Image 1 (cartoon, one colour):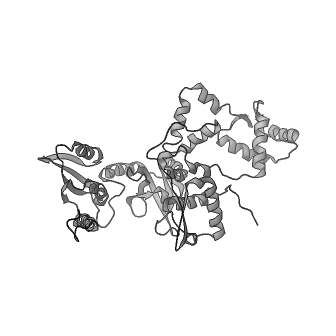
Image 2 (image 1 turned 180 degrees about the vertical axis):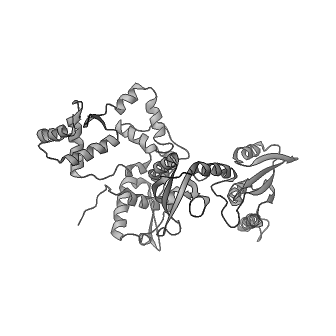
Image 3 (image 1 turned 90 degrees about the vertical axis):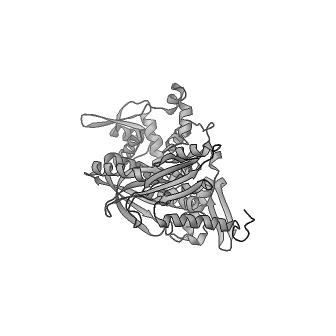
Length: 419
C-alpha cells in the first residue's frame, strides 16, 4: 500500500480540494463524495501541512466542518504558493537535475552525446539519450539551459542569468520583486524569484488581498494566450450548487473582468452555440483547452466593446427579462454637508451619468443590461434614495420588498418605537 506523501503529482486534484475548503468551506467529511474517504483524508492532511495555521474547524451535529480562513491584511506571503512547490519528482529527475548542471557548469557548449558520456564517466550512471534529451528540453523551456545549433548538431549550455546578480545590479529591484510577489496576477513568479534569492517580503502588506486568485492563475495564462492569438477555447465549468455536474462550452474569450466589490474574476466571451456574450467565474472553471483561430475575432471584439459599455457588472443581455439595455434613473437627496456622498456617486457611477436635478437632489442615469447588478450598489445609499424610475417593475418591487423585510427585521412593524 502506498504511503502518504506531502508531495503531489496532479495539481488539478489538489486545486479542487483547496478550492472546496477555501471558497465553499465548512463541509463535513461525508459531503465529499466524488472520491473515496481515503483520498479526502490524504488531501486534507496535505493541505494542513501547507496551511495549518489558516485551517479552522467547527463541530456540529453533522460532524467536523473544515475551512480555510485568513486575515489577508496581515499576510506577507501567500500560503497557497506552497502547493506549487510540492510537486513530486522521480529519482531520475533528482539525479539528472544535479548531474546535468554539474556537467555543464563551466564547460561552455556541449552536445547531447557529450553530456550523456560525461554523466557516465563522472557519476558512473547510465541514461538513455532520449531520457537526457527530454530533461534538456524541459530545462530549455524553463530558461535554465540555452540551446543552439551548429549545422545539424544541437549544443547546450547553462544560462548565465542569475537572480542574485540582477537584484544586486539594479537598485530597488528587490523591493519591486517583493511588491509584485504578493500583488497582481502571476505573483507566484515574483515569490519564486524571492525564494531563489533566499529573500522574503518584509515590506508590503495588502489591505485587499485576494489570495484565492492563486488557484485561478493556472488558467489565466491560457486565457490570455487565447485572447492574444484570437483563438476559440473549450472550458469545463461546474455550478456552485452542484460541483459534481460539469458543463463543457466553446467560447471566444474577450476579456477578464474583476469585481471591485468581491475581488472575483470573470472570463467574458462569446458563446459559440447560443450566440450571445456571457461571463464565467474563474473559480468555477475546472480547465481550459485552446482550440483553432477564430477568423471573425476582430468583428466580434468590436461588438463586445460596444456592448460592455452597458454592463454595470459582468452580465450581458441574454436573459428573458433583459434582452436590451434598460434605462434607469435614481434620484438621491444629498444635503450640503454631505459632499462625501456626492463624491462617492461620481467615483462609483461606472457607466452612469450624475446630474443635479433640484435643490439638494442629484440623479444617476444608467442604460444597463441587468439593473439587478446596480441594485446591490444602490442599497448602500439607503437613506438618500428619493425615487427609482425606469427599469422593470420586478426589479423595483424586489428592491422595495428588501427594504420592507429589513424594516420588519429590526422590529418596525411589531413596535414602531424600535428604530
